[in-house]
Length: 476
Image (cartoon, rainbow, N blue to C red; front, top):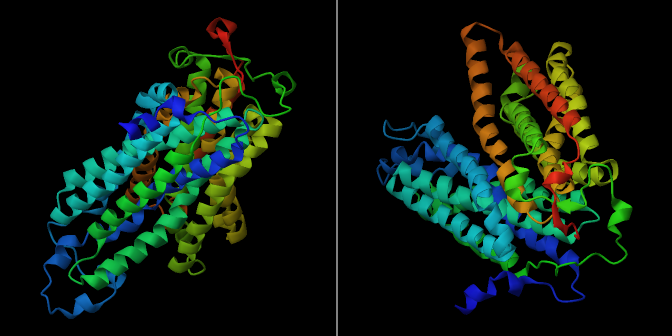
């Protein structure tokens, strides 16, 4: 009971003189952990060979190979899971990220970030643990329910709780604040991917009849559960009415920055909410169009010049672009405004998507790399800037709940984006389109989607005063 009371919102209030810069590390502890989701693909190939390896004789010489070489050397058994089947684990996790953020957003604003972050740590950590049991017993429903559903709920709770807290601590720099947290989500894979590979190699070496995947899931569940607790125990929220020293809200007031709060139920009925929903949907869908195709696209557009190894390094570079864009664009939005930042995304983006097929025709690797790098920076920047955009329009009181509902656009994009890319690719292949031109139609469609986002952004206006909670003005 003492622990549970420690999680109460009242116990999270910062004392006078508390340094607000101690809050970003707490947020990063959560986002660097749940950012592992972007590294899930390192498990794809090993998960397709579990049964095949378990059927090898104890004295089979293949078992002496390293884990990665063993995965490549063994042919999948008929009962092994396929890549499309495993792909559902990540998709379901992203769907439940958006759904849980929407469902529990209002609860987060009521109980405070500590309790929500604690629930996130439990769900994410135990999602790995149940997933480990599913892998060990080769029960796909356990893996899907563990990592996909339970872990996805942990993703949603963990994603929104630090963001809403940082917005309240940094009313003078809301874009930079959200970028600090969400940058961690983009960069989490850079830690998780090599760590997961090393763990699988370690457990395979210890038990060579195993690929080490279930043991790695178990280890990651414990590691992330413990690390996320650092964020749980160190997070604080500002006292009611707190403002940074020297900060005068009126001096920072801009046309689209509301001086009042709007409740989550009212906000989700306004045209501004749905305009931002569509903007996030198209930005994420378009970004997925490049992110999911970066490696094969680079090799197909520049055959003989970009090898598989170079393509792998290029994907790593795009991960850096994604991470830097989350902090860079959101911080830049504090100077030019959120609407102007999205106008840059939706004006520059279509030109860059059209430049990708052009780079293939002209065989310009530099143009291709530049276009993809900026696109991925804006993909990450869109995620990091949208919470501050919501704060500008609807105030801070229930921004976590409003952000949670808006993230259903991410859930939709997580399904629409890959499906769109997959079906377009299949259509091109069936009609005999050469590999070097199979990405043209996809890129043109993505450019068109961003133009829809441009129209939506241009239509955004300040929220009508009739929706304001008159007795609850924004104070930070």
